[in-house]
Length: 283
Image (cartoon, rainbow, N blue to C red; front, side):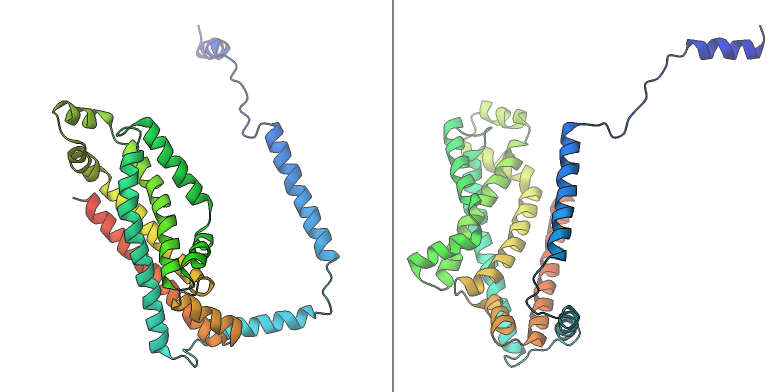
């Protein structure tokens, strides 16, 4: 038998491979496409029939570029001065750190009680439901609610940020705890170890890296929220200075400097978070 005949026989034995479609047609894909095209048509129609109320688009764009130039290319401390801005920035950072610490302490406690592999199922379910309701309400709303009770000021901001931080970190920590191998927990229970011994001997060493990551993520969120509630809840800080500079005195030079300071603090917090997490992962 020749080589050509062998190759023909081998090819005839191979089954027909089905055609692989990378993008199969489905109802969900069709609906997404229809919605996307509809939004494009609505947006195009709205832009072409927009009532500009006498606004000159070219002039508005020119003024926008001038404002952006003042903010980001010519930043300065304005009339408030750099010491006042740095003090306000420090207050916002301290507010975010304080509320994150409160959230981490109580969040870890509630996370332990809410974890399915540690405590009673009914107790855990109740805690998770309460925390879900708290998380459903934005932080700024909680700050405004507490400002009604406590009055405008730092107290309302601390309570509002801490309240939401506890609910957020409870969910994050509990998911990390539930991801632990149950064999380790059960082995300690068999030896007669008490509940909190199990928590600090088996749970804590396992989730410490995840704990650091989630805590610093919440710290960054709280820093952003501290800026937001600075003016809304009368908490002061860099948020209030930003509101005054941009919305009242229209000092865009100072606004630009404040934005740069906020970005700098965010980068510093991220850098610290990465270094601490690497330290615990390498131990």
